[in-house]
Image (cartoon, rainbow, N blue to C red):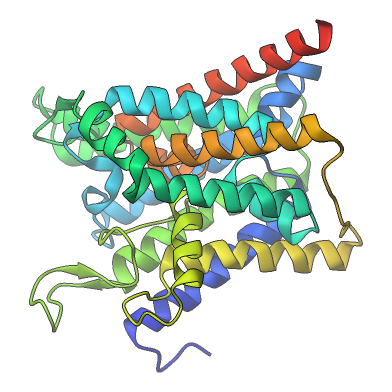
Length: 366
């Protein structure tokens, strides 16, 4: 069906399919990072967190295998840069984690809920996208570049864990295998052995989402790779906003989607992996919701509900760009590259969400 497509069209078409499958799976299995943390805090249920860890484990192992086989080079992703902007990872992760609780879900979950009929999610996406764009290229971007991102550690070999081990004389392949087995295998072991056994649907859901991240790397990093672009005569990755290989992420891509829709007639704005995958999530979720009878129109309950979602959306837009990713972008795709910044962001997001639940409990008891 996809035979005959050029590299750009092929990457975009496959990105839409990847996003569609992600949306359908997340809708069917209730996969949600915020929900995973909420389940632990409120009722002590670890099943959705174990699904998230299962996705992380599969993504790490699969991405490491692709890298080791020479199919992709994870060093050409945005996550393995030599600048370890630790303050940005911390502040961005905390803001994103706090915001996703106020907004009833992260960027990915918001796209899924929009497909299932949530008008609240439409408002959240619009605010998130605008604030994310302001943080990428607007007034908040000046703050980000001139202040926060200047506070960083420079790691010439790269910030990924295998490269850091290489500084102590560990060869690249054993370092990659050791880190992938330790982190990826550890996540899989915890997901499979801790607590109540996951259902077949939950096992399939977590595994599929991790696999989709791996497929995303292959599509943008292998099928979309040009050793020499005909126009620039330089190495290039087609249909990516960053100019590097990309996989699933849902903060900056929402900003890029708004930009593409608003400036549709501008020929310089092209459909990309990030935009196509984001649209695919909404379509896939909508189809699954319709088929299962779960499609429901949903609006804001009251003024406080509206205010919480608006503030949460703004925090996610700012924090997601500052931290270079979200619960999927850094929490799965970034972690699959074994980047230290992704691990720090993941922990900061969880901490931010935990603070938000404590805040909500305080408000409820006040």
